[in-house]
Amino acid sequence: MFFERVIPKLLTWYQQEKRELPWRETLNPYYIWISEIVLQQTRVNQGLPYYFKFVDKFPKIDDLAKAEEEEVLKIWQGLGYYSRARNMQKAAKMIVNTWNSVFPNSFNEIKKLPGVGDYTAAAIASFAFNEAVPVVDGNVKRVFARFLGIHDNIQSSAFQSTVFEHLKEVIPKNEPASFNQSIMELGALVCLPKNPKCESCPMADYCIALRENLQGILPVNKKRTKIKKRTIHYFFITDENENCIIQKRSTDSIWGGLYEFPNVDNEDLIFPNSLFSEVISLKEVNFEVPDKPVGITTHKLSHQNITAVLWSLKSTQLVEKEYFKLVESSSLNNFPLHKLMLKFVEWLEKPKINNGTKII
Image (cartoon, rainbow, N blue to C red):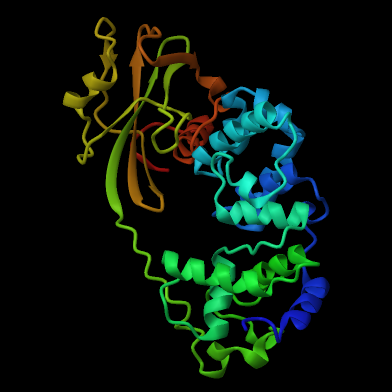
């Protein structure tokens, strides 16, 4: 049975080598939940500052539930996947209203929360409530595939189920939290995706991948994401008082709920005259249309490669209309902005000479 022979060695290794992390020093399910959501798609060293900011701003579930959405998104700014932040607030409100602000204490109940799947529910249930339910994340699947020499696609639901059922049979009932953490930590520190540190692995004597020199082949990961190329034109429009226009993205879109300059998609790098009127419906206001953009940058997402073109336009007068918001240019950083917008805003704040197009 998987891990049975190495569980004692694995747990000993974990106690000796584990990283000291704040969410491992608490049984508070709210804090553990925050850490798990923050660390999805994020390395620990990147996520740690966000964790501290989040628990400092919203120390209790009630604080998160009653906060303005923009407050939550501003704290989350830079982490990406903003639907996670919005789902956290929805879940907080559900906990307040359904469970009287008491965090649900079982795997099956935790899974009812918005944005919480099997992995997150298992992590909270085992770490906070000592429930013997296995956690299966990317690190665990990689360790599992290498240790048993399995060539199945680790992205398949069948492989996920196999790992879960196998671990459920061997997870120690008296210390499920340490067991789950030990496998995850092994994947994070030793059984790395590239150049694993097999000489430091407590499971090396029984690892099929090591014995057959398959570390560079396993795990088999056949996940393929079709990358879309986009060119987006952003319009930094200011009036004589240095006010500018921003707009809020719809919650069902990428970067949902965050602010940005008005924009359109257009493959050409010249000013999109035909599309500009679709974005700026302020027909009574005259704009000085520029000959060239002030900046160009690129931005990569998991499924998109974006070329972003920034145009600077002047107007004698700007007014709020439809879904456009008129704000002081100097106050842009007070709003939750996505990373691409942050590049533009940070660049616009720097002293410069606007004598051509800059690579931002």
